[in-house]
Length: 404
Ligand SMILES: Nc1nc2c(ncn2[C@@H]2O[C@H](COP(=O)(O)OP(=O)(O)OP(=O)(O)O)[C@@H](O)[C@H]2O)c(=O)[nH]1
Ligand SMILES: [Mg+2]
Image (cartoon, rainbow, N blue to C red; front, side, top):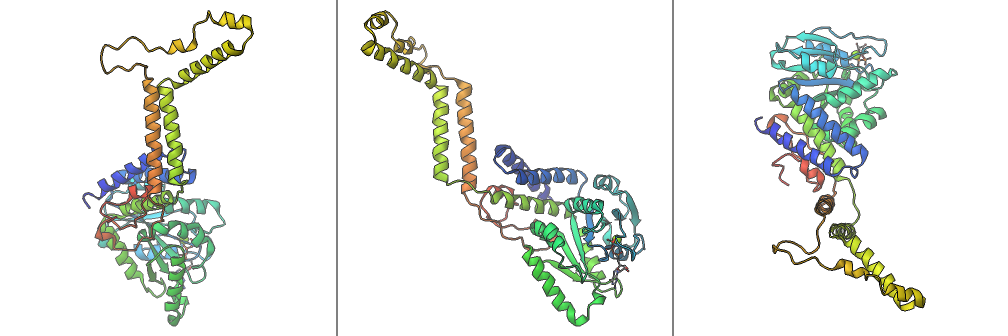
């Protein structure tokens, strides 16, 4: 993993620069998303990458707490028939290391030590309340953890796996997070074996419609035990890779990059003309053109009055200094580098800087605004994930070596 955090740091720095240059131009929604991504990355990386934080999310009664208990190997989380059962997030920390500060940052109060499976040492598994809750506080908690954990395991039951709220409110918005999500088709004992393939196909179709190509899907049941070992292996692989936090941040940056890539700009030529006009006006101001044009206007009025005014006022004007005499150049400069008309240096700098900033913006937009293709699922252990080439501001945030 050496090198990956520094590449991420570069991409985060690029994002910060984009926000700075694009202040007032990048729409509020994209700017907020970008700021949240930077804040999350900064805070998460402060807690190191030793732990992989995984949350179990899903509808009420889908079986999150049951799966949590099955992986922990103890009945820690209450499982119940009355809905919703889990009202507050609960964490199991695998292994001897202290996850206190990390859990403090995440805001998890209920914590348990889990030492059953050595392969899972370094895992922080969180059982969440329901995302479709009648309780607002449950939904708020889910939103918080969805935005902050390294890996999300969605526990989907046969009744609610196609639920509109799940797909619209969460999965479609997490289209760039395919690498850091997995899906359990849970309570599979309630579906006839012959129907499992059709269920999986339908779930994959819905996920593809959300923009999640090639999702990790496991058919599970805590009644029959089906899929639980496969789930434990998936978790162990992610924990062993020790790059869960980086992969999550990478996915966030892809989402921001897609948002920036979608920004449209007026045609480049029109834009560059108005930029040039503004630059010319700015340079003119710096060179004192405002004063010159005021003097020329005064001279014009003076000459007009001489030619057409009343005889007495014409006679009087002959004794006035001609306005253009004010523009007479100063005595020759001693050094050759000195200009005849003094330049307003701060105004000159301002005009040049604002032109450079605006052209940089226009160019990065004009380079292209094709949306990034949906990311492919790949083994997180295999290095930084690949990403599509959109050719836009978003390209600043691409992982190095993505081949674009
Ligand atoms: N048939 C069957 N029932 C299950 C399975 N997993 C959980 N259940 C049952 O489903 C009900 C809900 O399980 P929970 O684990 O409490 O579900 P939850 O998602 O944590 O629910 P909330 O805490 O309300 O969000 C309980 O009665 C469980 O016994 C399963 O694989 N098969
Ligand atoms: Mg529960």
